[in-house]
Image (cartoon, rainbow, N blue to C red; front, top):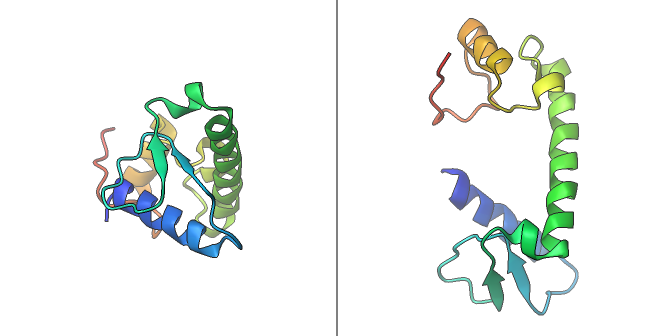
Length: 111
């Protein structure tokens, strides 16, 4: 699907789950054609909005926790250490073990 469509889909699902719709959305520069809800896409939003910066910290913390949990399910990849980022250790593990279910197949591995 790609990172941008997946981001839009996840954001829409999150919006639909809210008990009440926000009056206005601040987006970290996500171009979203067709979004009917009032919004503003801020380039480098983390440096312009404390709300976006705080949301980014919360999202990264949650993602890192999920990736540490993947360590047991996919041992050998080192997810607890690199959290899925494209480190040399992670790329070497992919070369050694191949892609697992949680890898994005669209990424090219350069060792």
